[in-house]
Image (cartoon, rainbow, N blue to C red; front, side, top):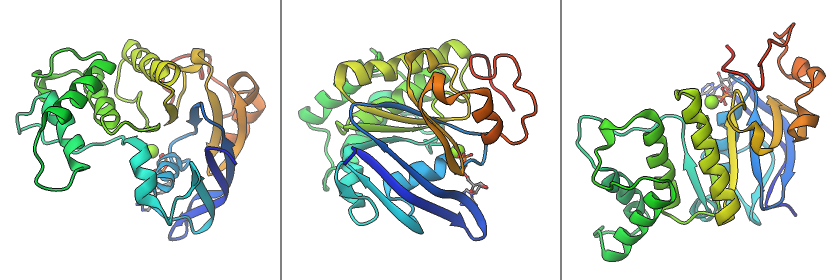
Length: 253
Ligand code: ADP
Ligand code: MG
């Protein structure tokens, strides 16, 4: 059985279908990128994998756990980096505090920053290349913030990271830096990476396993095999012509 296995998973919001009969399997170690247009069900897929939503049909298992039934166990093994996070920028917080909050939220009260918590926070910040723990979160650039959020996910020492559009809202160089950081975590620390995005140009040179998704899985495999003109036309029905640089270039609409 694969580290991640979905079999015939469907999910709808009322009569709006988000995912239909989705099946795939990944063996660890993996660096996997799900690509699909807006509304393809990418965020819904991540929420199902985390047990935040329950599949209406089919089954999901992660590291041997049945996700809907054992969501709490699964979540301890996964670091989730949502697309939108709620950190109130009016409250001054150092990046060390942002990451420590995540570490503490896993403990029972009273929640005290012990030497052990501080050590794990420093280690997570080092892993993502942030060397000033006292830097103010609100004053960071988008790319640096994304690093803090990755550190926040790493502090629980997860085996897998799930990332929702980690490249959006960043300039192209920054997207590539984040992609390289994720790749290093995968290669050097053995952390499985599962990210979703509407375009893969920042990470395509890292040769991820690609899943082409638009409510259902159109193809899965190596980028060169999956991202063919024919597959893209099927998964992006509005697309009559593949613009130059659709995969390797910048954002599309
Ligand atoms: P993606 O992340 O690929 O853009 P989503 O998973 O967010 O796609 O959404 C898939 C489909 O489900 C879309 O049609 C979207 O409008 C719908 N959807 C997502 N979340 C909700 C929700 N909370 N309530 C109703 N419809 C939703
Ligand atoms: Mg989304």
